Length: 196
Picture 1 (tube, rainbow, N blue to C red):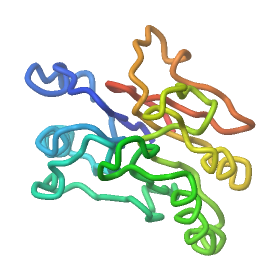
Picture 2 (picture 1 turned 30 degrees about the vertical axis):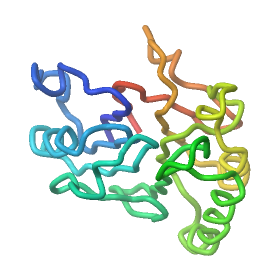
Picture 3 (picture 1 turned 30 degrees about the horizontal axis):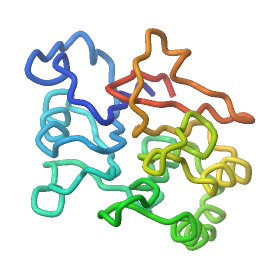
């Protein structure tokens, strides 16, 4: 399955200078937060593929304006084709804003999902805003990843862990991907195309 993964930055080639060739063959769109709802609606319409999203720490407008035709997957395990996808919104707590979580609260969310994950036979794709701790994250309070995400990877071994939040410029797809055990952890800042 070819997936367009987006996060944190509106890409002109995917919006006001839309390049249809860029999204050729895309079967689903995965959005990792901090993007305007209009951008997600536009992508869903132009690419004509289902769009699944989580929210980032700056997604304040989503309370009033939801993206049209898109599926919010925070705290949910959903089927995307033959894959089981788990979505988790937000970042580490740093100033009390919405979609910010202390480590203990995110760990409790994951504990509540444990039975669902077990009954589903695990998870194939984890879609988050923040990264796992010490896997491409940073040391400032806002950009530290979650330790419990590492445990999620260790216990459930998803094939993919796709996140945003960490702004970086990449020249190759290999720079975006970190292998942790058997899981490919992908920073999709801006956009990246993946063959799942």
